[in-house]
Length: 279
Image (cartoon, rainbow, N blue to C red):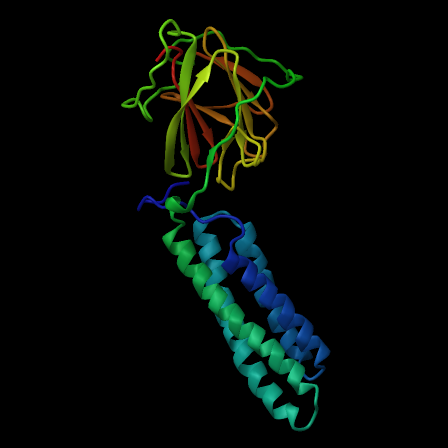
């Protein structure tokens, strides 16, 4: 989902998110082992649960709320456990362990603040690192085949991503090739020429022909092949199904095969434009 300011909604696990979770777990362990800080382990458990929710929740507002509540949880845990650990260190040597837990809680506070700010602001699309690999051969046929030969306006997706760009083909090849345009998490990639009978694998896999950095894309998300009359699109059972965009809405291609003359495919926050053959 795109943010109003052009940035991307923050989803999944990031260094700050992982840092929150690790600090919470470390705080729990040292609070329990210290014996004198068993009560604080309940506080650390609350902060850890909030950190886990931050990484799992996709909704921007709820993610920010969980990160916001994690800040005082980590802060108060670090503040009180530090003084209790400092006082008990002179009486019980185990107070040193509680001090370690308090340092982890203070670090968790910093990570939670960073996560909250990044959740509110969104992620920068310029940080995407997608690209192109080698085009391969068409894979095995899908178990369920649905071919749509109706190329009317209702079933044909609208093209409009990169229409101002053109690829020149060798003489005599007009109609034997086409091009693919890719916008990976808001970052446009150069158009990719493709020949009839050539297949492309799109996903996060390092061996994919179209490598996406989109966290919502599967490693092997969708297979695309150009034939003589248009494009064949096969979803590979992705968690977030490939969607065909059109002026009339979206059509999911969940684990099926579709034929389109041209159009746009939505993969998470990324867009793949299939231009008409010979364009």
